[in-house]
Image (cartoon, rainbow, N blue to C red; front, side, top):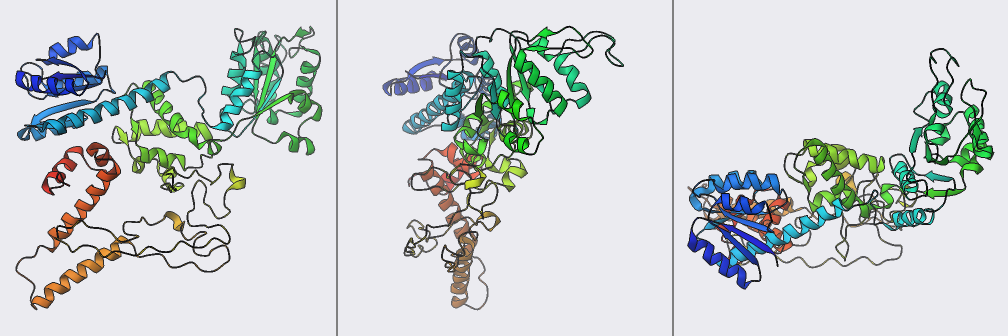
Length: 561
């Protein structure tokens, strides 16, 4: 059963909540002081903690601070009277899940605790997935193929060539191949051949004898000797100078090499794994890479897909990097909202997984709140991505359409942007639904927005790309007026009605109040329907405070809707 702990010095409050929650199937423990709760927290932990804010000894705010230090992901609900609103604000700033005003309605309190338990389960599942994650993360079919190939090669010492774009994680694949091979207990040595000056690269690979060249004051073992019995990973092999390609070919052919300035052959018992982001076949045709070396290295080839071909993995990778960045910086891990994750999934990620990791590190340092919204993302990500369109299934469309890389993306699409509005050739356009007239302002009938009301303006004119002209070249119908135009017309109508009643402006008018209340009511009702009544979720999606949405619901009398 889900455990809920109650902390309150009022015995009657503890008794009522304990009985009600027990009837709902929760495992409940009650404490009269914060100190008793903290002592129990040393040996166990609940799903949700519900605490009064004012108690003898340590207050609920102090309890909240200590709980967040020990269990950052645990939802804490603070109970408070209306007069303690300032304290409730302080509680939210300290990480409280929600506040429960006294006296409270028992069914609503139970529902709030249920939402907190559900949130705790989601956070625990995400944290468990991250903590139990293997050395590589990936649920996309393309990554599963890579994992299967690693499994097939687990008992082999064959030479492997890994191809993939920069930042896609080629070294991680090489380390996995080494770890799951018979050489896994021996050294894994990596060398980026593009990062070493060409006049030093030979010494780095094969070592040198004392006095072999100016500055060689002592003998030095090269990477082949350092990797003896294990694996040598040669990254960016396509940039290796031609003279070193010849020496590497000889080592792969007969298994022997010489140190620079040396005369004694050394045997190399090393498995070589190479990687490149370049097209080696093309470099062979251009005479920049030896064909015989290419065939020596290209025994087994693994292609690592770019991140844009595995957008399903972006949320999993992002959460993993957010947790890791928080651990490295010694801070509490921040949470990415669903909208932020959806926006990240529409970005093209030219820098691949390395770029995503850098973005998550930037967010850990720069994001202003613990919950990261889409507006908090780095400017370059926002500038090259857009809010995802959803189809009939409600699943965001992946960047680039099919997710097969830039070759399959629509020609007119911006990098990383999903371009809506295009239709298949010969398809009949959908008929425009009738627009119901909105209810008069101030009436008791709910406001029903007309079709197109509230539709966001597309970024970068994306709706015009592929939508202004159809596949036959015929101009599409002009876009519907935005909600601001409809609002402007409504205001003009209300002011005209005032003028019709008298030429002079009225001494007092409620136009602004009516418009504001209807505007706020419509936004909050829509958000609550979208989140199925979860106020905190609705507040986060609207970008307002949790106490703000509660106050608005009360002021606008939306609780009875």
